[in-house]
Image 1 (cartoon, rainbow, N blue to C red):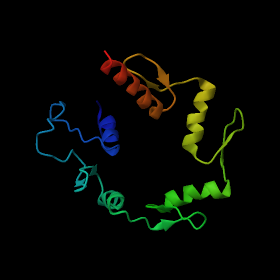
Image 2: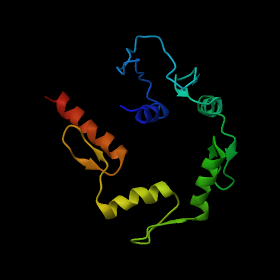
Image 3: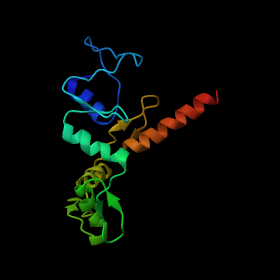
Image 4: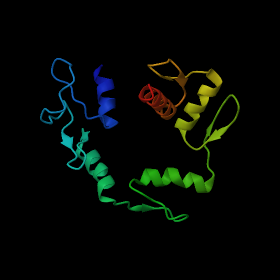
Length: 152
């Protein structure tokens, strides 16, 4: 696994650590901060490269959600999440598919939509090879293999 993949795993909350020779460290070993990841959440053990990101993350544990929607009362930890949420109320959809003209409020939704035109399925099941457009669908699919194995 390269350094970029490892940092992505850590950002996603994967707490598995690698030893100096690249092998996965035992979960029984003491928690050691990965390289360039200096800040650790005392609540959940997740690592962050900047103190700002750790402090922002800690709001998840405290329940502090200072940004509130005036329309529906929903509250958010980050102002950018409130701004993104407001598109629900305004109907603003600034991202457009150049093939079918469908509109989206978020660029990542447009990017995912484009797979419907290309036929690409970037997430594949390692057990049966079935492809999926969304990782969430792959995770749900993987549970079907767990069920079928427990029934054997």
